[in-house]
Structures are given as C-alpha cells and as structure tokens.
Image 1 (cartoon, one colour):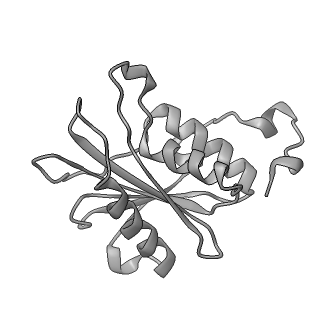
Image 2 (cartoon, rainbow, N blue to C red):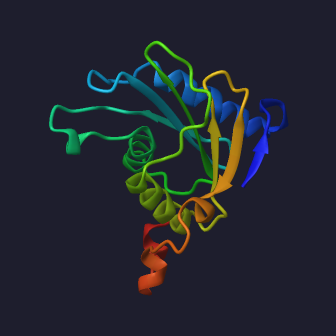
Amino acid sequence: MRHSTYQQLTDLQRKALDSAEEALQNSYNPYSNFFVGAALFAEDGTLVSGTNFENAAYGSTICAERSATFRANAMGLRRFSGIAIIARGSNFDTTEVTGPCGSCRQVLYELAQLSGTEFEVVLSTTKKDKLIIASIKELLPLGFGPLDLGIDIAKYQK
C-alpha cells in the first residue's frame, strides 16, 4: 500500500479516477446521502464506471464497485488491471479515502483472478488531495477465489 498524488498516477489511473468522479454524480443514495463512484480500468484503456444504488431493503443496495463490475460483465468484459474509487457526502467532502466494503473486496478479488493481474485499487478523497494505491490482496489478505478451489476459469476469461 502506498500514498500517492493525483499527478503521480498514470494517465490511465487519472482517467479512471476522473470517470469514477463523474459516475458518483449519478449516485442513488436517499438513505445514506453518500455518493460513491468507481471505474474499472484495463491496460488497453477500457474504462467501465459504476455508482452506488441504494434500496429501502438495505441488503439489496449495490455499491459502486460491484455496479461497475456487473456492468463490465454484462458488456462481456472481465479483464481489468484495477479500479479507482472516490466518494463524498451530500454536504461534505471526504478527508480520508473510502475503501470498498467486504462484499466488494470479495468481488474484486474474484475479478483479479479472472484478470490474471496484480489488481490495483486507487482510493481518493473528494478533492483528490489524498490518494492511496493498494493491491486487492492487500485489501483482502488471505482472500479466497475460484483458483483456490481449483476451478478452471479459462472459459470465463474474456
């Protein structure tokens, strides 16, 4: 895990973070009033964004990270090198980075195994003045995915 600045990000990471910031504007968050945007990025420059969508049945809420992942899957895309995540409140900017919840970490871990990459997670405050870059393995130590079950995922890798 390392601290970074917006200027130190790669062009692709900056584009993904900017795309995540755009996506958070579409957040549906009547219960928490917390906006989250995420954008998956692939080495070829492909970006797929998502945002949180809350629900009165709270357990049915979908986080931005899973929203982007499921959207990518629906598009037939499963190989990414990382994700950028940014968040804010309805009346406040974040002063600390917002990390993915446990469910999202698990989904991202599985996506990392499908991608066959050291999947990077770029976390940013609202003003992009504090950034942390971590691998999904750092965010989910001792993670468990299809490869740990001995599953041949080749036919699912696109």
